[in-house]
Image 1: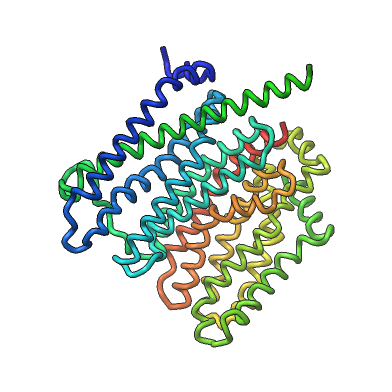
Image 2 (image 1 turned 45 degrees about the horizontal axis):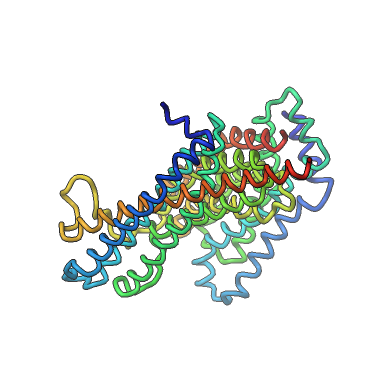
Length: 242
Length: 218
């Protein structure tokens, strides 16, 4: 029993089919409890008022926007090294979810920034590097869409993903150099010293778990769709040849 | 390698089109800016570093799809792939040839255009230095992008979408050098970062380009 067994599409399909509703359900549960708790049962911040509550959407989506790219990087490497098709398809499936997460993070940030910073958008390092990450996602998806042969597309997008990771990291530090920030530093870390206070922390953890589960569920769902698309194509070609 | 380099240079100069086009584009963008923002000297001299860098970057972008597309279409890229020269070296040479035909002329022309934009006198040396250091990175990144999209029909737009985000760090540090130079501040740090990006690109991207080319030529 090893993880590589799931590289077999059939095995992947049969394993994920019963798991998928559970992941979706758990994600929905975590999100519902976390968000309702966060929105309605936490006190207002003494300076930010009720706007602080957008943290329950903003922080988890920003977290997943970055981790989605990381997951694509790992999946791309697996494809390049071991040539498992499911892995390439999972990377492809994760990209649009990553785009959505990036957009949620940018939009909620803008909505929060309007009353708090007095501006929807500022050319601040964190904001700018997120916008650049968004452009990387767009390029990645466009490259997938532009190439017809699936193996070639998987190879080329993997190379782009690896190079893009390096440059995304580089941009992250370059924009730091270019402009001093408006965005506050991390208010969440594993050592509890600099955390937000406990009342906000617990629902936040719950909605983060919800976003992670939602991401996993969506990626599995989309990977299953991609596998089915692949199968239909194969069947059509076979039917045409017969 | 040298034979390939001279061949590419000769093709670029004699076959027409690509060589002067980038320079003309650079000139036009810089001329258009005062029409857009108005002719105030003070404003122009403040935004000159950024404008010059963005214009140079776009001019370099313009000729990227010519790096490999023509060779791919007439089959000489396949010949190059079967030659004893490794594809990594081919990618490197292509980038160098692109730089010699676009980056170097752009660097040379930039001070004249800086004059048009009232760039402060202290800014000229940093401008030359930063373009000379930064444009090779643009060529190398562009070669990588061209290698990725060489199999795509009419991949020019896709190429820009892929390459422009990769240009961000180079642009930031390049324009930062000129801005600091024009304001009389120390330029060493961004200059070193810029050189680091260029060297890093030349060390790593030939391998990525060769990997992409191998997939496309399969």
